[in-house]
Length: 42
Image (tube, rainbow, N blue to C red; front, side, top):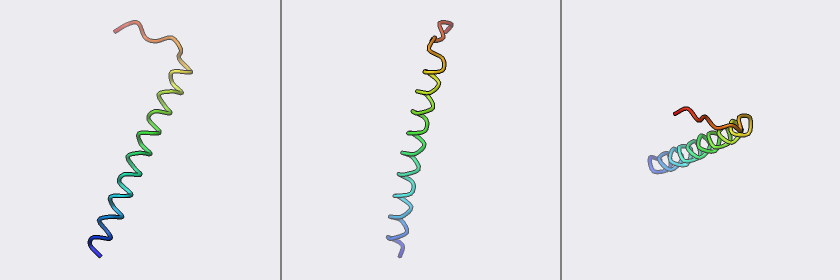
């Protein structure tokens, strides 16, 4: 049971990371589309 639970948690953790990374990339792309002008003030 322990090994099964560990496997399930690893899968859920991996899916969560991929979901968060995917959402982050999508948000960045949407922000770039909304604001085509890049900030020149650094």
